[in-house]
Image (cartoon, rainbow, N blue to C red; front, side, top):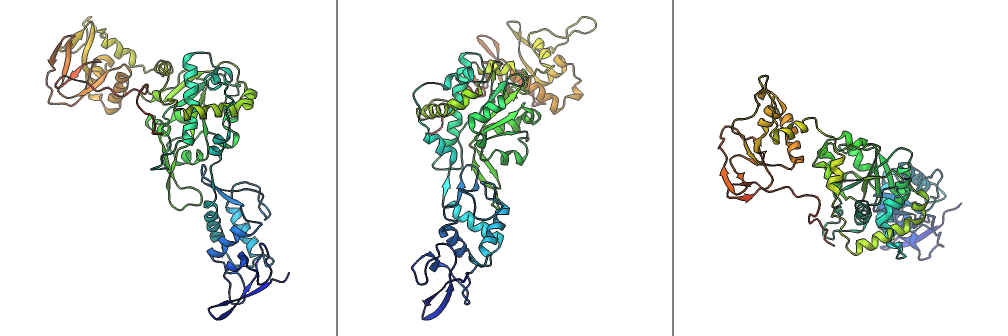
Length: 488
């Protein structure tokens, strides 16, 4: 094929330009090919300007590339004109194929590198951004029939209870909030959804299949990556629902890492095609699945979980049939500002039932109830200065608990043992007070504790005790009823 030649006057100089593919405009016609810069012998130059112009205008490439705002991936809207393209996402191999396609003498015959081709594709794709999940949610129309409140009961086999109904509402509306809520001042921050649904039940109940159908296979992933690794945060990008199968990766990880993984609103990592890491809004919700009845290792971390027992049959076909209506109703609830951040009233009791007990806890409870260990002669082993109220220990210290409740030699009181006792005390509802303070001696009398200037150990007091000038001991905010409402 003979390449058409177009001659333009450039500043009084005759400049020969070769034609190039695309619409194949006739010589001298006023079409987009006239925007291409060329060498003196008429070949199309491999500049970024030319690459972008061709990709934007050639009828075989025009509207082919767009950027998925959810996954940060360049996507091809239709089959590519080069051979070997079998995926929707634009990958490294496609850069080479497109470069070869552009270099073909019957097309543009231009010299261009894979790297420049990739940069041009990204530049064009960013001009055509889409968010498939958001488009889906804003496109479904609710028929007015309530389904979300009883979804876990009707479709996932949970028992009918107020708790199951509230958990279903919180979970579904929270998932919608992750996608639709946007902070106009900082778009890289996602909605606050700091809880995780956990579906409990025997194997073979199609829990994973049901979740995949609920979120859509393209927007759902099951991962065993640990939340302490960078791969975890790359895997969840572009996903709406993330299943933590059998709670394995969360069960083996540090409690603090699990809390961070669930509550984080922004993920920072290096996205595909990028050289430097950037911050991206969190748009997914987590769902744990497990066969166990006890799997929470930490009392405070357990507040992040919404466990639901689902021993009944999972109705996958119904989930598929009513999926659009479930999400359409959840969108309506979100727009009506349903308080998905307020967890069910029974959540603390449900969480406590899944707590993997500490063998020390029973000993600490007996000590606090005044049931002390006894020496060989029958004498109770307890601190001499111990104070009681209504038969219970009023206040004590971490070291006293280790020595007298656990029976550990003071020389072995290391940080690990102290933190273990601290977790038990927090689970039992006792708050720590540092240093010299004011504690409750009787119900209507306050007395200064004995000053202790040698150590700064934690002192554990009863709920409602006071410190310093009688101000109430500050209790950590409970997840239930806290004011975490997002700014709509």
